[in-house]
Amino acid sequence: MNKRAALLLAGAVVFSVVLQATVLPVFITTPFKPDLLLIIMVYLALHGPVESGAPLAWLLGLLNDVFSGLYLGLNSFTFLIIFIVIKGIANRVYAESSFLFVFTVAVATAATITCNLLLLLMFTQTPGIIYSITSGFIPHLLTNAFAASLVALLPGFNPAQEVP
Image (cartoon, rainbow, N blue to C red; front, top):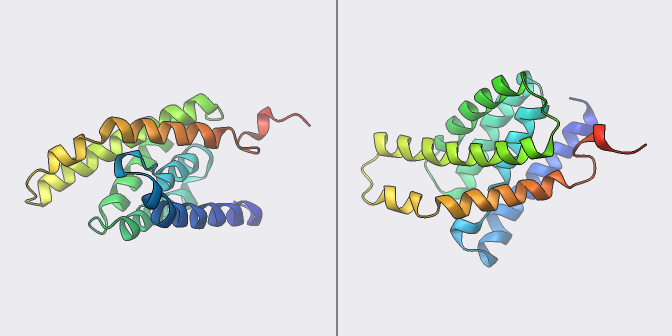
């Protein structure tokens, strides 16, 4: 990863954290808030190297835990596992497709919700956790897919498709 890409990634992460933690909760209810850090993690899994992507996926999950108020380490573990799975699959497919990016974000959202639910069921005694997590499953999935489709429209997302 060159310096320009690292600066763009750092700027995107800071912008996403500020947007996700301060601006969006004021205007959007909980199941309709996109998980912007998950979208960045999926982009890293599809386009970045494993050596820098795996620690960054863990750090993105940790940032998500710090600013969302969940148990510290829950999303970081889930993000790291999902990154490893996506990276294992991305090496075998054409990862430059915008459709694949949106589809992968949708699948990663479903996997994140499922893994978080399973981990919370195994390690906590929270009554009603199944209902509270599954009630927002479909809106959260669709919101993340929509946000990923907007990210895929950004200039520079896919340099192979740009006209010189």
